[in-house]
Image (cartoon, rainbow, N blue to C red; front, side):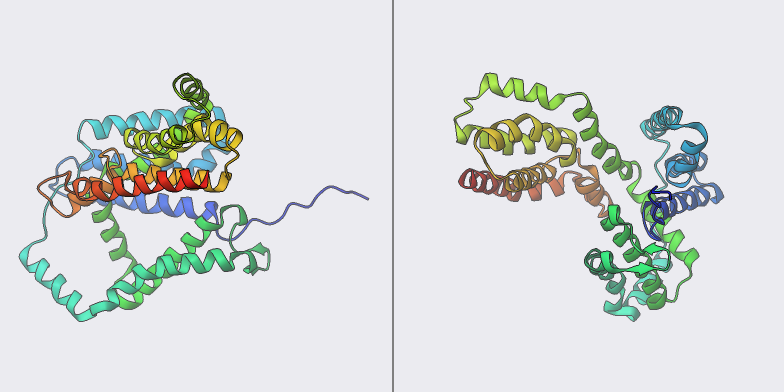
Length: 336
């Protein structure tokens, strides 16, 4: 009798569904750019979003056909192409405000719908939490409904689909209108939409290049390992500073965790790993509030709100960020 394990059926909702859906939205944005008439750089704008959406839509298929090494090289070339298009300014969409007639129509529609407009937006976090909590118990005939290894992503996908259905119910608009609205929002954000993906991968790059070991060597030369205050301040302030440089706490986390938190706080001082790493991430988020490198948080809102000072968001957040960083440092010192 064979004792080989039987492969479990894939979950209905997981990365295999989420990533192609993202690719479809980006490809629809590209097609929308190409269909425009009389707008500047429409070909390059469409090419930018098509290249960005290609890995989401066909990444797994290409890897199955060409193999992982060649697919990785093609992905690197694609990233360089995206950077070239964005660097030359060809990815920016036309900043054309709505006409007074269109603006008046939108205001009248918003007044008619009232607070119901917020229902789809509020449904996303609510349904995501419900999905994460109930996900392990949700089944369909072939297996799990939500992918156990990617439960949060699967729950968020389900929540977005539910919110989209709710939005159609509330507004009465068509799916085509939703894609048109997504194109306007995506082009308003522009190339900073890529930053979370790019910056999050930097953590893996630094980890593979043993940057954390280099930080640990430097810290041992400059710090007294038995000085709890110096080590704690180096970790929290270093997380914030490194995040300000890289624009993302996920990129700073593996470096500072491997270089300072693990050898000095967890191993030498015997601190609780969960507390140290959690507070370290919160310290990194304080740096996120104070840097233009976190463009999706600090520069994009200023652009969407048409603020004269593009750093107005950072200036408003800096006092709060510094206060929170000081409190996180004090809290970690007391815990250690």
